[in-house]
Amino acid sequence: MSKVVEVLSSEEIKKVKSAILDLIEAEEADNISEACEILGFPKLKAHWWTDNDPLWAGQVRQAQQIKADRLENKLDNMNHPVALIFRLKKLRPEYRDTYRFDVTSEPLIALLKELKAVAKPPETAEIIEGEYKLLPDKETNGS
Image 1 (cartoon, one colour):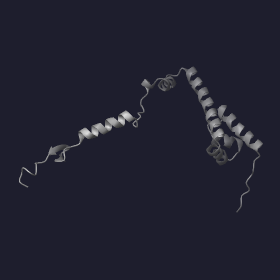
Image 2 (cartoon, rainbow, N blue to C red):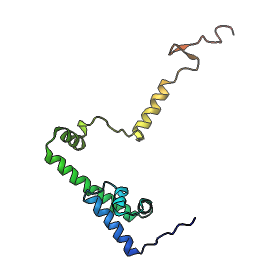
Image 3 (cartoon, rainbow, N blue to C red):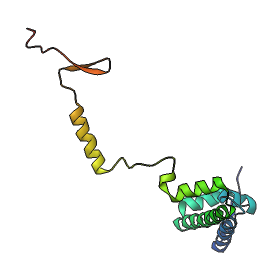
Image 4 (cartoon, rainbow, N blue to C red):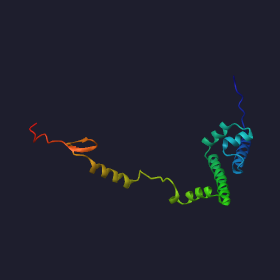
């Protein structure tokens, strides 16, 4: 079973892309897939453009940022406590519940190496009940 593939001209592609961006910016569509559903356009094709056309991908990100800016403004104007809490957490890191730490920094790696070197048990030790216990010296026991 063969499938007929419709080839769009570059002008038609520009119109479809523009319509998708307009729908996202206007908050009529949450994402590319929803915009495609509204337009009756194949989602896979639009997502293929996103994966293979850096300019288009950048335009989609910009449209999503414009939408996010509008939503932020709506939240700010609502004066709803929960919305304001989330907004404050975004703007002030000290109000956040979680933090990200860069564990690949050079000073941290050097410190970890130093700690590992200091924490090495002596060669004549074994772990007993979670603690290092020194073993008797083989030479002094006559072994």
